[in-house]
Image (cartoon, rainbow, N blue to C red):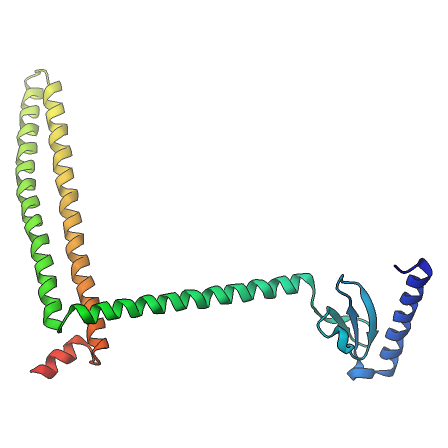
Length: 222
C-alpha cells in the first residue's frame, strides 16, 4: 500500500505526464489515462501500455476534456447484457428453426398430395357443420320457448296476476337461448379456424414440394 507521500508523488507524476502530453500534442492532440482493475488511474500518456490494453481508460483532448471512456463498470455490464441477449436470441431462433423442420417433416410424411389435405379439411368442416345444425335446432326451440314465456308473462301482467313464477321462467328461457347462441358463435369460429389452418397447411405443403402457390399448382395440373 502506498504511503501518503507515495500517493502524492503518483498524483504529481500523472499531472506532469498529462500536461506534457497535452503540451507536445502527442497522439494527435489527445492523452489517455489508464486504470487498474480497481478502477483507479495509474498512468497517463499518448498510448496505453500493453499490460493495460484490456483495462479501463479515459481519453482526453488538448484542453483536458474527456472525449471517450472505455472499460467502465457500466459499459462492461452493458456489453455483458447485450452479449447475453444476443446469445438468447440466437438460441431462440435455433429452437424455432428446429421446430419448423420437425413440423415440415411431419407434414410431408402425413400427406401424399394436396388433395388429401382438402379431404381432411372437408371431413372436419362436416363435423363442425353437423354440430352447428344441432345448435341451430336447439336455438329455434329456445327462441320459441322464450317467446311463449314472454307472451304469458305479458298477459299475466295485463291481468294483474301473480307474475313471479313467469318472470323466473322467462329468465331461464333467456339464459338457455343465450347459452345456445354462444355455442353457435363458438362453432362458427371453429369453422373459420379450421379453414384458415388447412389453408396454411396446404400453402406450406406446396412450398415444401417445390411448387408455387396452391392455385399455380392446380392450374399446372389442368
